[in-house]
Each structure stands twice: as structure tokens, then as C-alpha cells.
Amino acid sequence: MRVGVLALQGAFIEHELYYKNLGHEVFEIRQLADLSLFSLTNHYPPTTNNSLLILPGGESTVQVKLLKDLGLYEPLKAMIAAGLPTIGTCAGLILLANHFQLLPVTVKRNAYGRQLGSFTYVGTFDGKANVPMTFIRAPAIESISKGVEVLSEFEGKATAVRYKNITAFCWHPELNS
Ligand code: GLN
Image 1 (spheres, rainbow, N blue to C red):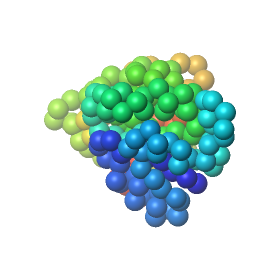
Image 2: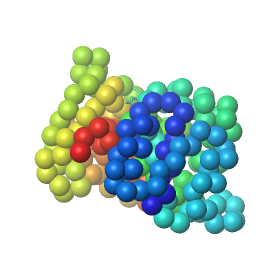
Image 3: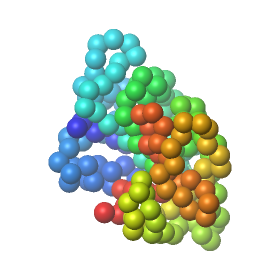
């Protein structure tokens, strides 16, 4: 796959290493021209072949500002809406749900409290047991709409979801093997 990792701010290096180690072709998205590194079809909005977009964790307010300043906000949103397979972690989940409004879940930022700001929980992900899940100042998914599949839960709340071409995590899958 061609894996484009949004590399404006936050934990993008970890995703890059993860996918490189799996043998995929990884590139960073830092400016508008980088979007052409996906193998795109030549109609608008472009759709992609064999590609994956990663929206990493970090600080969503900063990421949104930079996306807008760089003119990346609308083009990226259009590509995801057109079906580009996308993974969002943490701040990436906040972007997909609260800003782009392409993921129909309600998300509360920094929901796991200051002292519990970072912790690792071992649970079941997509039917697979014993998956370590690292939460860092994580958002909570407060409610989900019809058609959203829950992939993992913590204390009765969804912590990873799948909807159409989008998979989104409250936790950081790239930090554990
Ligand atoms: N607290 C961050 C935010 O609100 C998200 C934290 C993270 O991405 N690890 O954007």
C-alpha cells in the first residue's frame, strides 16, 4: 500500500515506522502537493487505489489550524468523503468526527481525566483478545450512530470504531506491537 501520514504535528513518526516495518510505501503529508503521492484517479474529488491515509494523534486544535493555513483541510476532507481508506487515532478521531463530520459519533476531548491522562489497558479489539491499548489524554466516544461498528470498548464505552472507509481509535495502536 501507499500510506500517507499527515505529518504536521503529533505522533506521526510512530505510524511511519510501523507501516515501513510492515513493508508498505510510506510518505509524509506536509503540503498540498504531497496529496498527489497517493495513486489518484484523475477526476474530482479524486479517489485512490491501494492507498491508506493516517491521521495521527497530537493536538487537534493545532492540527486543524495548520490544515486550514496550508490549504489541506478541504482537499483531505473531500478525499476521505470520496472513500480514501483512513485511520484516525486520538486527535485524528476528533478531526474525523468533530471537524470533518465524516464519522457519525460524538466525541468528548480529554475525557479520561488528568491523572488518568495516560494508561495502557489490555482488551479485545475486533474479536482479537489481549491487545494492548495505550490512551494518552484520550477522547471518549460518547455515542455512536447507526451503521458504526464498535471494535473495542473500555468501561462500557466504544474506544475504536469502523464506519465505511474510516477506522478510528481513542487509543494509539501504533505504540504497541
Ligand atoms: N488531547 C488531544 C486533543 O484533544 C488528543 C490527544 C492525543 O491525540 N493523544 O486533541
